[in-house]
Length: 387
Image (cartoon, rainbow, N blue to C red; front, top):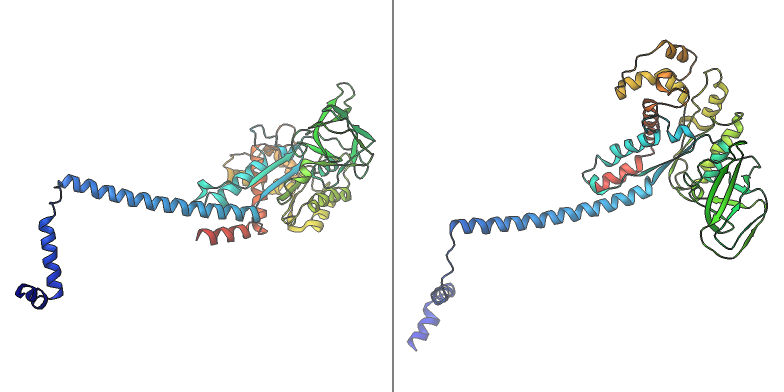
């Protein structure tokens, strides 16, 4: 009784707790002995586990940011599509084209500046340039002035080729050279998807085009004047269009050139105001005066006077920006005096650009897009996501 009274009355609450802990400690087996090395290893393991957890959190955060950046790119900079002829396709000898340079600059200035660039895909810059095509032919590939069947045809039920005569919706001759790619990857006629092929007569040079459906089905009668839907007319419609056409027109008609350019632009959707028109670079200042005035009147700062730029600043900028080391020749001086593109920026045909020329065009297009604010929305959105 006295012992219970002592326990209840003499000891305070914290003193009782101390006694209990001492007793329990005496009853428990001693902890295993750890060497100093074992303690260090255990601490290191704990640190590594913490580091791994932090890395996982950072990695997940980066993935979340990357996904949001990709969504911003899809909305505000889904891509750039470059419509044109061989001047767009690239004849620089070293495989350089202005779209490839433009792609590099978009990647360097918008994607690679981000810490999470390794998780991102750069916006696509599509090169849809095809050798020797006229403005009306290119406008048809793009879907601006569609191709239509020139005669009644019958698409057979089997996967067999059928001759496909066609022209522009305006009734003009069109001669696409890039069948199987560059907007003619495939076509659709009367709801039937298929591929387009081409044959050229070696002597006359006359061409025949053929349509081959992808899958067998019912025979389809296609009346004259039926629209031919190209791959290029249904894809890239949210991209920023760059249009570089006109040099292959048999007889340059300024109104018809503008009609083709505007038809391509107006075929686009939410970003169609974010376009660039590149001017015809051949000829002298005098020869191109009327054309260039019309281009400025129609397009303002969205028009790049390529002939004027190359004749006035091309060689200087190639040396300054690209370290080209070009020494101006007497021939260059003669050409520049007339307002022509100097030969030192061209290949031997003095029509297509060399690698320096194409790099300058890509730089011109990127800088003009940047000046016009075409990249502002995506940069603002990305900045809010990253910071």
